[in-house]
Image 1 (cartoon, rainbow, N blue to C red):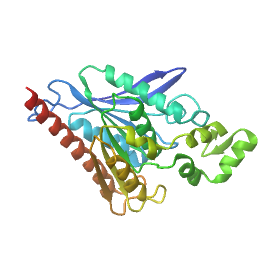
Image 2 (image 1 turned 90 degrees about the vertical axis):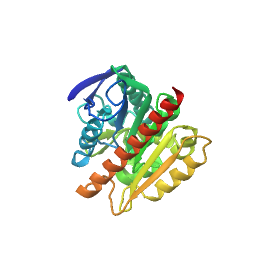
Image 3 (image 1 turned 135 degrees about the vertical axis):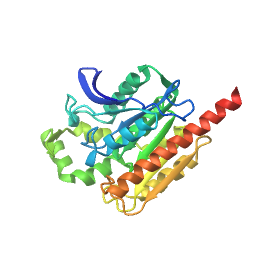
Image 4 (image 1 turned 180 degrees about the vertical axis):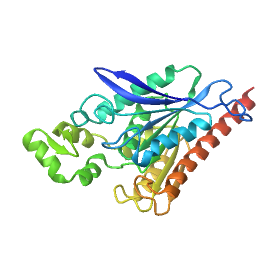
Length: 276
């Protein structure tokens, strides 16, 4: 079952979709007691739908596996109120934590099994949120941005930033961006902060990503391997683009994510059996 909801964040209303877990026979512990929560964080000027409905299909597949899934629009994106370009990374982190509050308040959600899936700039937001909020236990990063300011400027073009500085705002794809938005991107270095997250991580990237280099997957893996705790797995999808827009690539990224999450669940259940 799916339900469209609105989550209040300050003066803004964040449009979201909640996917309830499907009860499955033979899955011990899944949907029987408490269930794991997955929250999907979309990328720059994106929405909770995703290109070619990537996030919708991901959420439905995970719900069939017994996960409760929340996907939402950041303020000013999709159906949410607000102005996206008037905010910044600080606001996106805060919005993600508000959505996390909502998800954690849902009946039957297990607070020890919370995962953020972040795509592109949403990967940065997921990392920064996880570092600041210990409720996040694991991360899945799809084609994650590595250097927020420079990566986003490569997408928009330097002229968009220059116009914002000169005129107070600039237009990109119908969004008005202030200098403050770009300034916020420059204030964070996710590759440096990632080492502070102690949970498990899955990194997925496509070799034909012309927007965010696949090299970032290896950089993130190296950083996560430097930690004292938490595992890090990496999956490189041959010829996949930034949004996994072909059918086979889309199915592969969803399958890899689902299998990794299920493996995490199996390990946790085995650990619980040993503790009994």
